[in-house]
Amino acid sequence: MASLIIEIILWVLKITLVLSVMGLCGNAFENKIVATVVAIGILALSIMLFHAIDGDFKKEKIMENERIKYINTEVYKKPM
Image (tube, rainbow, N blue to C red; front, top):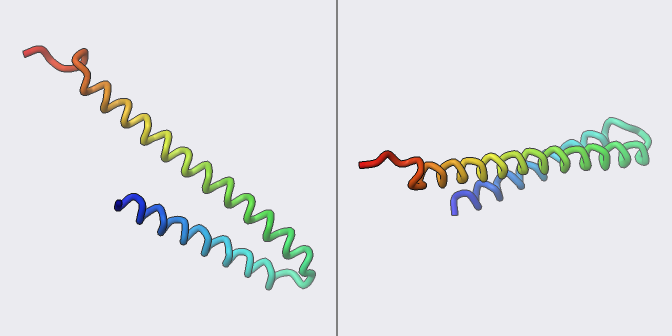
């Protein structure tokens, strides 16, 4: 349950960050077409970045779970 809440908070922060960058792009360029193209580019890059970060965390968690499973096997345990 706590991980779900943390993930929701992270997505809210991601969306807020992207929207604020898009707002900055709109204010930085006088030409609205250029501002829109730059904002869409930044949005696409941020989505790719967040997806890569999420993928890395998931892979790390899977590897940790596999390590724990290996440690709990009979092969690794010391004989009594």
